[in-house]
Length: 329
Image 1: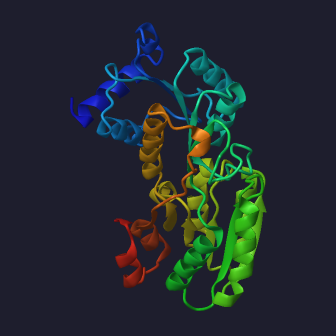
Image 2: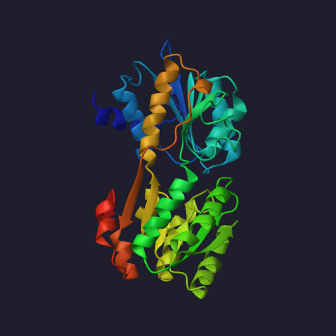
Image 3: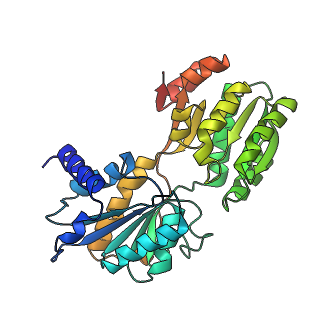
């Protein structure tokens, strides 16, 4: 069975009957639970499954895969129930996608290995003792990068785009525990690069329109948007507000740029889900999750949306275009 057939067959079975695999006896096959914070299987899940296939695993023959996701995105109660259901199936490894799913998994089991993926601040959230030696029953991939290195790189992108002493707004989520470190880094580093920074912390999504009104009044030239569970679900609305306000946006994830932001610089999520499969492989071969270091992103990608640039009347400097990993025409 080739990779495409494997993924298509599995996805069809999952979407048709998410609980059907429970009817098949597991035997001695390892059983892998996969709990998503939101959404049905998609491109990221395909990357996880595809990597398992590359590692020699095959659904129904060498492994049994159990996928679960809540009907209401990030619903803590549903996620806890789904996690408990996977634990009752005696899965050998539980993959948890996103902080809410990871929290749910760790709330219901202290013994089953948990592979977290796409989680920010795992130490601060109490998911691990440290990145180097997690110490509990969880390990995996965080999207956290070195704060200063990432901040410097983002500010350099701003200067390449707007070289003449720009005024830049930083739109950030006050409920994101990782955000204050980034805000401080931007505030400390922006002046030395000739950038005036206006930090706007949001706690509710209905504050976005007022924030962009304030940016226009303050004659801001661009806005850096922090990702999180408050801003992320509203990325399309934020992109529309930015375009209406004639403000170029620099975001942290490709999905933002696909939605309509001008550019993004940050981790490539698909890589994390492939690496999650590597963690599963190591654990099935006897490694203890508490001894496996939590991995930070190995690759950061720059994505530029030329459609948005045109709508803003911006010409992207050629060196910036040549540097981009992906350009959306």
